[in-house]
Image (cartoon, rainbow, N blue to C red; front, side):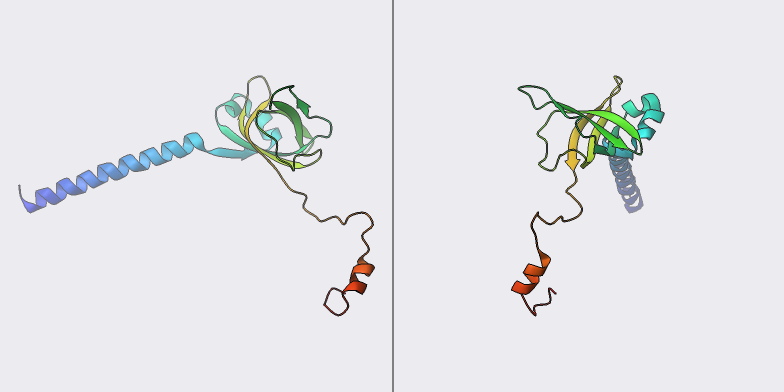
Amino acid sequence: MSMAAKRLKIAFSFAVVAGLLAWLTVSGFDQNMQYYVKIKEIKAMGSQAQTRGLRVKGFLVPGSLVRTPNSLQVRFVIEDEGEQMEVHYARELPDTFRDGSEVLVEGKYRPEGYFEAQTLMAKCPSKYEAADGYDADMVRDMHPGDGTN
């Protein structure tokens, strides 16, 4: 076999392997991709919403959390831009999960009309609120000249 034929065979082998890896990468990403959508977009998608992983953000509707006794299973409602959606989740809730908190859920929309979350993240409060009885003037008096006043 000539040197040119060997090089051609090696180049062809690399091209086949590279093509196969590219195809596996792209097809794997598409199946595991989480699409970020709004609640109103899910409702508009119809049955297409049930075929892919979705990521949805909303605010926990106060009083909507329902726990299943002796189970981690919970149901609650999130709201965004006036649209609401029921969410089912079967894992431990984060400490920051409270009425009115911002929630991000990842999972799939079910034909029964609810979102089945595999992952749930609750956002921490975005602003610091001073405790009752906090007196900024008293703190300034305790630390004169240190740049806090």
